[in-house]
Image 1 (cartoon, rainbow, N blue to C red):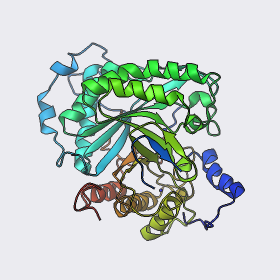
Image 2 (tube, one colour):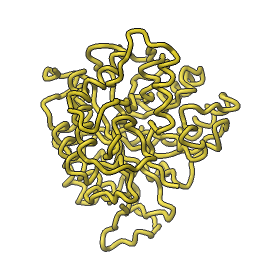
Image 3 (cartoon, helix red, strand yellow):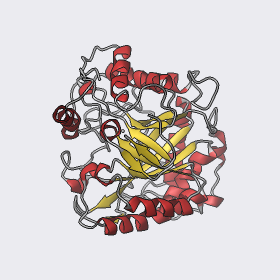
Length: 412
């Protein structure tokens, strides 16, 4: 979810607060708005779809179970170079909200195949399924599914489509911010009245999704995303231990970029991702190399050199003027500028390779959209990249580059 800022060797706390705090007002933690190295046990010092002709999109008739549903079209979907341990994760965040009028199981399986086919065309080998869960406010200690939360059973169907196609898969629940008074209120500054009650409620919500992730042999389950105010709480110890009992894959946490560069990430997980929206104060005409320098200036605040244990869990930017100053701003809609977005993607990919990171996931594709159509810029988020030829070209070049990953001989 990326400075050309004149950073000082010793950064005054007051200045750092302003620099890091300003992007929150602009939005640095995008979920599309519609209404040193890391070691295990981390301690570190951010268009509606059409159905197939035979199907009514509003049909809610149950289809066959995921295990017995294997349409012949699935077999035609195959990742060119399936991910293996040590390889770079070249992926996309697919954000999935259930429609108000629930689509049929057959529809969502067909939609997943459409997205899989598009991602294969980009050269992707990984996909992360992000979906919302809900809270009642910034001090609430209750977590729950909502009308827009896909059920575990529906998640299983979609996971199976991607896994049958050979993708590395990540399951990533993410707190919806509608009740948090955005943009100043967001998931990173919640303060539950009772943290013990919050963790108990969160565990109850996560348990069936962990079960599905285990049954479908997902590679990673992201236990939390951008929850700055709760990082380091002892409640994570029992929650992560429970998750690791239920799920045999990698349990990860995705930190927001500001805490990653300025704070101490203390989370009892086996992998850290970063939602990276580093502001770079440069003109829209800045070169890719200038953007690379901007990213490295931010990353060097944490550690210099290779970062093989870091995954860019989210990265993206609006295809519009002025976006380099606040890459995650999904509220503003300035004049469309596809070159800004494409150059940013190229720069981020270069940084991932030069710093020998484990991969990148672009934000994002909306699950119900048709990725093969140009975004309607009157209504679409500027962060949408599907259907923008310059950005798609940059992604394909990234995903088909010579960089194989930090665990391979071809890593540079």
